[in-house]
Image (cartoon, rainbow, N blue to C red; front, side, top):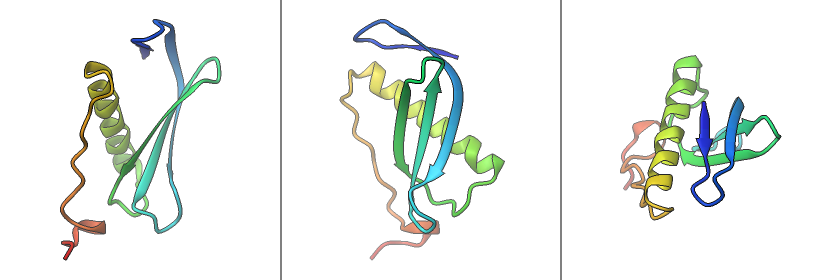
Length: 93
């Protein structure tokens, strides 16, 4: 997969994707895309799956890619709707 920066037009050749939780019980997840030159693009987002298995990891990466596409398409002007439920789908008061 290759992404091109709109500002600099330098190709980004993806070599690895790292999915990690901020802390064991944190609702925040970081998806980090690593390029062949060591450059990284990180997407931090809320994710309600406690410890994502391969399916959950795949969904997290998919959400991060969708978010990056929105950011590139709108030159960074993206509003992200946060979930109306708390962690694990429990409604917030």
